[in-house]
Length: 195
Image (cartoon, rainbow, N blue to C red):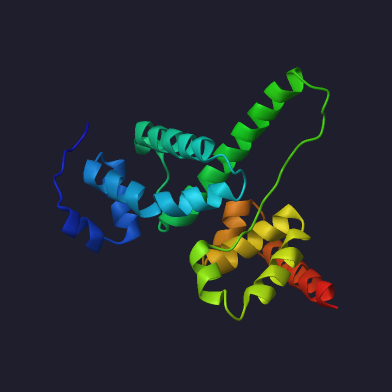
């Protein structure tokens, strides 16, 4: 059963995430729309790190939101929506890329699985730092490009999405200590590339 706009947008903003999620699960369209608007950009930017095709990312996000709307009554209760959605979109994009790769393999002899994760600086960051820091940004980008995809991904989640180790480990499907080890290795590699 769909409940249409029984809560105002102003009241939705005041809810904590667990209550917002509960309202969404109960069919509250305003809560669903608020979740979509609030997390769409983060999901899109995160998805773009896996693949540059904006349409593919948008399609995956829309499919994901359709799926969670249809299955909302069966979804688990959660306290933190962003890590849940980033985990879900990560899985959906990787699944779609695997599907596309299988189709591509039918028409080519390439048996190599592509999994790329790119980190690039935002346009705003480049403008702000253009005068004095352009060379440092270029050097850091070159160092980041040398990191393996999983290390790039974890650094992006921690430092660009401001997520905790617990959230990152949930999204990436690894345990807490593995997440810390992965960050340690990534930073160590960045420092080694300095010399």
